[in-house]
Image 1 (cartoon, one colour):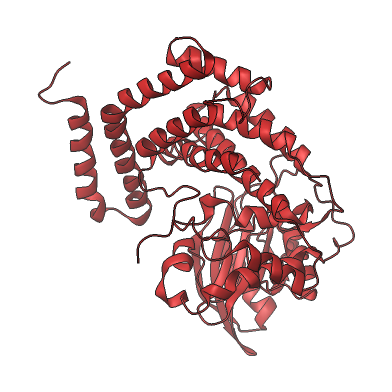
Image 2: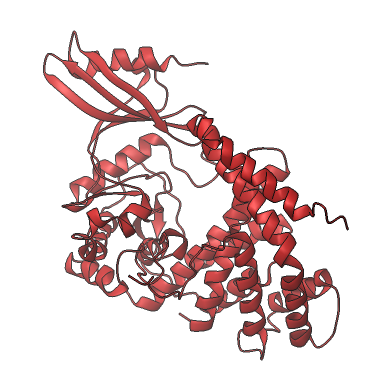
Length: 331
Length: 123
């Protein structure tokens, strides 16, 4: 079924803005193969609204991959907002009446998401020293949120993730000694599981909207949300592939471990040991390395013939360059 | 091998041409053209630096494993003996060999990448 997005957005403007509302902006921003994002504005009798629409243009398959449905995403954003996390406000979750398929609408948050700008643009010099602490605070707002009733999220711990990614790695047929040693080392240093909490699942520089005056403005990109170890979200934002050229600042290329942990504790979160965060950080590099291999394979096997894919395959060596240092230092 | 031009010079000439036409492309193709130019630059570096990197990897792996062999054979054996738990980060020479291999490979794939442990850039 093809969906007339333009017509759907016109209709939606009337539903949200009242009779006579008209679309003033509907620009496709980006998105992956199956996800569309629109900058969407309308003017109506009750005034103007500046929004973002996210919609999936292919059927959602819960068995395929790690993503949650857009309805689940919207429900989680709303629940974490009620617990004080800085997230975009969900304005509307689309239903059959809207004719847009699986989609939701949120209030637009202004700011910057490009990782390299956050780490290096002088516009962020003033707020940068406080960002790691703010990230700790906002993470606790997410982690303290009970999973809304009726949502069935995947539950993950360190051993489970190692099994899953080792299985994917073995299936690729690649032979990479550094990845082998990382699997071996992490298996021997897997932290004891803790009481699992709601996780963002993709909490990294690049998925957070930052404001040059306020710092963290909103946590975006919730499609990998799941339940697990709170240190997982901390380790991922410390993974060097998301430090955008500033490996000397372990948190996102902008801050220090101690500030992230202090912000988390000050917001009310339990103490988290640095070695536990470093376990997840190292697993983050390993996981990204395996993901790069699978992106190359999608090219080799003909699923995606874009030149991007084999070049992402060459990013495995960036994770190896990080992993040898982490293996040498230990957790 | 033919030297007029050398293979790496062919790769370099294609990269230069891609960079020349990039400004005329729409945003999506301009992005893909940049990726393609990077691919040509990687080919250039692999052709010029790859043989020395491979020789050094073979020497490092042979020291750890205690015998000579081809890159493919040594690499496969190294992986297997790490997987079995026989070789660990405490094994003499293993971390040194892996560190050299990682450094040489990132120099080919992404020379601008700043790995874990790199100090802050000079102000």
